[in-house]
Length: 257
Image (cartoon, rainbow, N blue to C red; front, side):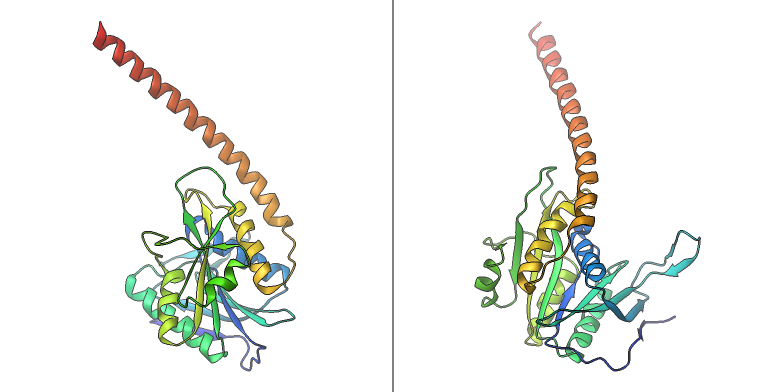
């Protein structure tokens, strides 16, 4: 296969006031967890598959030892106020050129379906093994800020300081050229582990935006397991800090003697 291939599973799709939601793999897999949870809980229907030479040269193997070529997929979730077009997948592009090409493709599809609002979902790395339920926002149109603040999104001057790397940020930039309002919503996460706890916080914001109720049960269970892992990591970190402090004291004593 050369280039990028789109396989349409439904030729004629009529959507009601469509909104585009992007939940690709990223920091803590926060956006991916939320998007996949919405697909599961809202009985979404897959509408297309995307294969590209910009994805890593890889196949994934399932529990039956059968492979599938890595890809991204789009699903349609229907709720009372609108239809949500959800992009999920195995990978983002492995090249800078590919990010631009694929994000343009995603936006072509969004425009084809008549989308006038986009939310990209991701994680904001704190580098700390402590939990915060804060969801940080960035927009390509300031008029979105007050609306999103009402759902609990926090906006901080010049944050994220290093910008937003990958599809979550690039889609915001490119959609501005197409006059499509877009916002990036980022759950705070350590950046070290898959973070279902941060995904829960982001899911609450999404439920507020769309005025829906979603069962958090599966994410809650995964979050509890992850909390146990984090607790063990903190113990190791404290033990290592204790050893380091003891070595410093020994060094000081030798110097004084």
